Length: 239
Picture 1: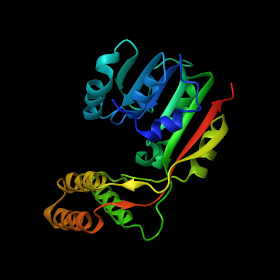
Picture 2: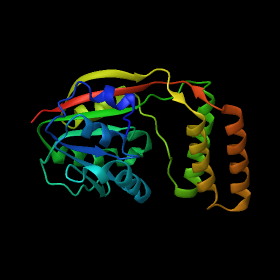
Picture 3: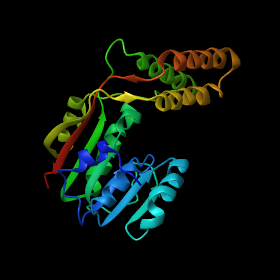
Picture 4: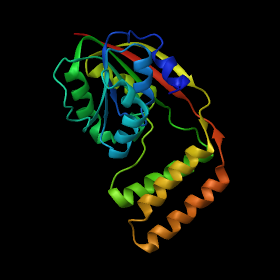
């Protein structure tokens, strides 16, 4: 499968070949594919989403079963041995991680990291004031707060994640820009609107109806938009 340019750029300066790797938050498997293409000896793609797990198995792992495995697990309790991973990626993960879960995830990533392990964290800066898609993300968070009592999205500045991981014992190595601006396509807009609709469907009609109507309005109003920045941070284990 084709590997997105953001993934290849983030991995370009990393010693992937021959290493045991962990994709923290597998998504649709783009980084697993990038790690395999770069010569990883073994890749563990971890997700707690059953649909994502099946998709990664179909898209990536089916032809690479000797080098890749999908693990359906919580990142706060990884089914991996202490000190067993030599390179960790978190590509577009932390924007869907609740602040309350950050420390537990960092603790597990530190636990499984081998000496001289590398860590690559790629994510999005908070959107600027005036960005149209920001209204859709705010609506998604409102629907999630009502349905699940927690926000769906949190955009952490690069400086925040850098301080977080250095506090957990990682040595900072570099920061790079992967996208500036970020192209939020019509398919991205539709996907986030569908999350709003799904969350709203579990709520009483007096709440769900206006949420769905606003999602529809924003899809039409936004269309697509190029705004914001995606960054990449690289670290090395100090042990």
